[in-house]
Image (cartoon, rainbow, N blue to C red; front, side, top):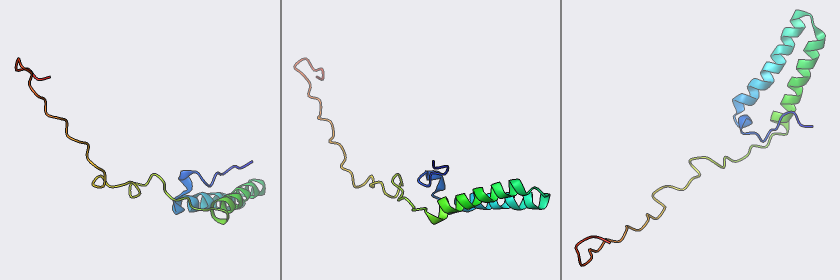
Length: 94
């Protein structure tokens, strides 16, 4: 079972990954100072797991939907202009 999916787009930014790990270890420090070692160990374990998944085994995915990767509008061919309407014998356009 995987609790953190490192392929999720939310984890592509480095600051997000750092913040998640820092919050987990920061909360462990708060629990140690507060005198509750059980919750300190649990939050430190969550921080260690987050570090493992988000840094140790993390493989950045190339941005597929990036605007820079999209072709320029100038490179695309413009659609052909519609043919001019020719008037019929009675003077109305077809």
